[in-house]
Amino acid sequence: MNKHLEPVGALQVAADIVDAGEGDLCVMVRSREAALAMPDMKFVPIDLALVGLVDDLDVRPDGEFDFTLRRGWQQYS
Image (cartoon, rainbow, N blue to C red; front, side):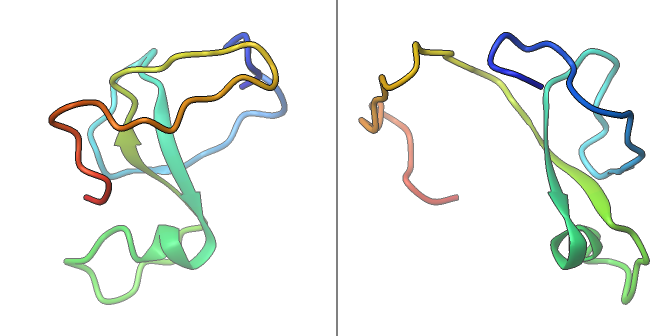
């Protein structure tokens, strides 16, 4: 997707680890990380996996950013 949340590129097929629904904005991983996304299986021959759902997204103008952690948020999870 581009910064206006419009689809870009061809459709892709991915293993859904997080039980995403239609219209959900997801985080995806490729290659080895995708195969490791299913820890209960010894080897999974996949190249793309949905591993997270985006709960909150702020799209800012180019060049503007904020790395401040909000109260209650953890830096690593």
